[in-house]
Image (cartoon, rainbow, N blue to C red; front, side):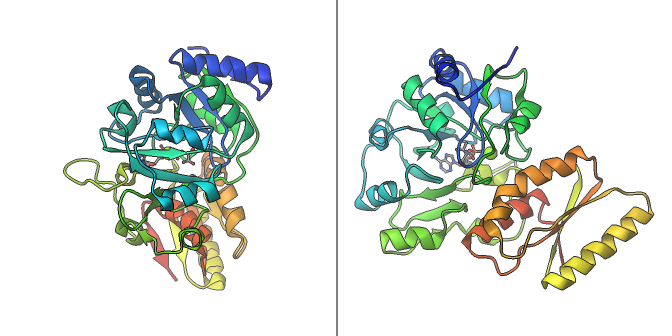
Length: 336
Ligand code: TXA
Ligand code: MG
């Protein structure tokens, strides 16, 4: 398949929208990461997304809309809490898990009774969804298991020749995927942390938010076989894995730095190529923005080992970055 590389021009967005309408696949920028879009109501289009990514088909997709009022096509009922979250955070990096309305294909929701919905904060994405005139299912536009794409070049690297078109916008502003919040129960539950934090959400709803207990356990959840059924099916799959072996070094900043130097030297002495990932202290947003791009960059350099310094004294955003870092490293942590 020849993949068209499009721009964010009006003409190109029109072309991309026509592809979505006719059941094709288009990768597009959002403020978080690039998404791989298909008509969420077209089962055969959605199935093509799984095939292009090599994604397990019980891992449901996020459905993207361009107007908050379009949520009525996807869910039967909105509580006051849901309405205030939408008012406050949309468009933006907050995905809401809601009870699903009939008519949404099982392929889109991985057979669940719920549907994840968000309105992205990106002009090209909103124009594309508006013109396609349907809700757009879009997982991150990477091959399954690879780091999420934050630049057009990342999408091309993974999906060129496998999808109909790529809208090559700029770098994604946020760099990590949206916060996923389950609002189907009494207390909202964060299933995936992002730059919209527990505190941000609590301030808006004036009540408690919980974390899915799996997020607080520093251990792999990638039991892909049997009966393990986390609330967010994406949690059980190995994620964001670089080709290199990766270790997270955790502890006081100065100790982390010297341990990284020590292990790097020893490895280089025996001929291993070592990549280092160390972010500015407390620059959590910057770390979020750079994390996936850095991971891909180190892979491209062909390093054998990645040594990553854990972010210390994390806030909510730092916690979200650490969630990705620990998954990438397969929870391989050294404490110093
Ligand atoms: O920022 C983002 O959310 C990006 C951009 C493209 O919007 N999308 C994204 O999609 O990260 P994806 O498919 O890579 O991750 C979606 C996550 C998965 O972990 C999936 O299991 C979870 O959301 N999810 C989707 N639908 C769900 C549902 N009904 N219930 C629970 N979790 C759900
Ligand atoms: Mg993904």
